[in-house]
Image 1: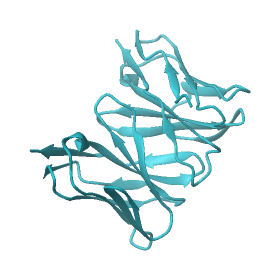
Image 2: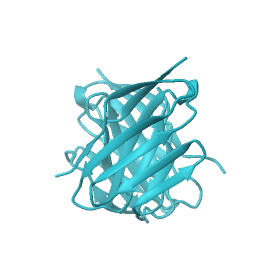
Image 3: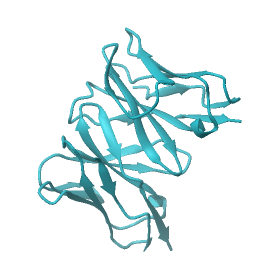
Length: 109
Length: 114
């Protein structure tokens, strides 16, 4: 079966660092994506990992461990505009993404 | 470069009717994937089209169908609408739908079935 787990919601303070975890069990694995989705808007791409290790892109970093079926998204220097849903998705077959339920992040002043 | 566009943005239909949604991918993108998003189930994959052929399919009933045209534009059709079909329908395009290509999402079509 296909299963992707991430926390339902998280709260953090402006200026702080937050880590959003994602664990997955899928029949195939061709890479893991993180998307950000603000309420009422389409998901937007944040990061992609296919090899183990850390990918850094500005304030956002994403880590992958294929042997553990685990990834995390790290957000630094949190801003109010980072309040959104963060979606972990596994590409297990061509153009097919399997999404987790999303983590609703609230950034408070 | 224009983004992914979807029409219509909002739609209200009655149970039993059918509906057709349209998606125009980013220029040069040949793969179009469709997703259904609901509060309870999250984002679920419907199907993917590449070069006018359905390449992948999710676990949705046969009432959900789609097609892709030679210009890569795609349509999805839902027949005999049910209340549970009320959702945000998102399409996403990518260069080839290959493993490493990110998918760019359109703004979605909000379908309400009454």
